[in-house]
Each structure stands twice: as structure tokens, then as C-alpha cells.
Length: 230
Ligand code: UDP
Ligand code: MN
Image 1 (cartoon, helix red, strand yellow):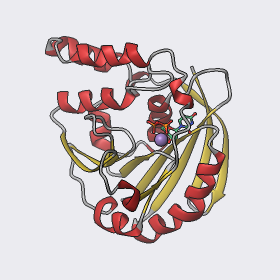
Image 2 (tube, protein in one colour):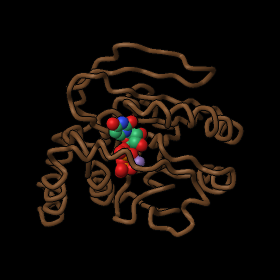
Image 3 (spheres, protein in one colour):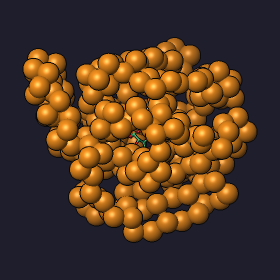
């Protein structure tokens, strides 16, 4: 069984450098059979698509039995968190939030196993720019009765003791669809079950299109892939 950390990435060099130099060694000591995959969206004049990039990372391994973490590049846990939270066991049909928003979403850092991710059809591929792919994932998980547990929230007064968190870059907020997607996920709640499932199956792992342009070994068990998505 492996532990796979998926880092969605574009144009955050300083954060990635810090993560690899400081956080990776700590995680590598504790998490058995660790592999880190940085998934970089190619420079293509498109807005960043965090959900889709993470789907590509998942597909790269595509193993039901592996543990996966989706891990924002700007958040760095202290040792105690790694031992007490990252290292917690998760069962099938369980998604664990490690560092997530106070707003009932599954962004930031979460842990799940492959079969769970497949069951919910991964992230939607449709959300370009900032926002709501994490809320969409929470909706999907709730729909399929996935158990959701959370650890540290982004309004926790002690969050800066538990994590080193870089200041927001805010470039995702130059998005055109924050409000639209926000509306879309709220609407989701009032749809029929049939319609909900139709929406979930309309976009996700099942119709993911991408091309890996380049693969770079950063060190031992850290790899970066550059992907083109559309
Ligand atoms: N990200 C990135 N480049 C971007 C936008 C986002 O690498 O242009 C990745 C990065 O891992 C970041 C995560 O997506 O930590 C979430 O984006 P951001 O930190 O902007 O979101 P917020 O923390 O404000 O929700
Ligand atoms: Mn951030």
C-alpha cells in the first residue's frame, strides 16, 4: 500500500521550493511508501483548474488500494500533525479533511483512498479559476454517503501553530466563475437524486481529457508532470 501526495501546481515556485525542502522530509519519515506527484498545469492562457489537475494526478496511479492526499502547496504541517492526523487510518467510503475551510468544503488538504475517489467520480473538470471545486467535491461525497471527518479548519485560532501557511496569492480570484459555481452548488442541494447523479456523472474521472507533456524527477520519490488540459 502506498501513500500518494498530489500537489496541484502552477507558478508558485517559492511555495513549492519551501514544501520540498521543509515539508517533504518530515512527511517522508512518517508516511510509508510515500510518493509525491506535483501536477503542473501548462502555461496555456487558461485559468487554473485545481479539480481537473488533481484528477489527472489521481489517474496517474489509479489504484483503489492506495491512500491519497490532495495537498495545497502553500500549507506546511508541523511534525505533530503528521503523526496525529496525516497518519490516521481511513477506511473505504471515508474522506478525512486535514486542513480544510470552515465552509463545509473539501479543499486544502484531504485524505482518502482510491476506491472512494472513484466512487464519487473525482472532482468536476468544469471549474476554471477560483472556487467551488472543493464544495462540489463535498456535495458529491455527501450524495454517495461518504463519511466526512475534519481536523483543522481555516478559522481555527491555532492554525498558524499547526501549519506554516503562506499568505494568499489570490490569483485564482481573477476567475470569471466564482459566483456562478457558488450558485451551481447551492442549487445542487434542491435537485432530485436522479438529477444530482446525472450532474456528478457529467464531469469527473469518467470523462477526463489531458495530455502529459513532460515528466521530471525532482528527487527520489518526488516527480513533477506538466499537463495540458482543455
Ligand atoms: N494553485 C497553484 N497555482 C495557481 C492557483 C492555485 O499552484 O495559480 C494551487 C496551489 O497548490 C494552491 C492551491 O492550488 O495552494 C489552492 O489555490 P489558492 O492557494 O490560491 O486557494 P485558496 O487557499 O485561496 O483557497
Ligand atoms: Mn492557499
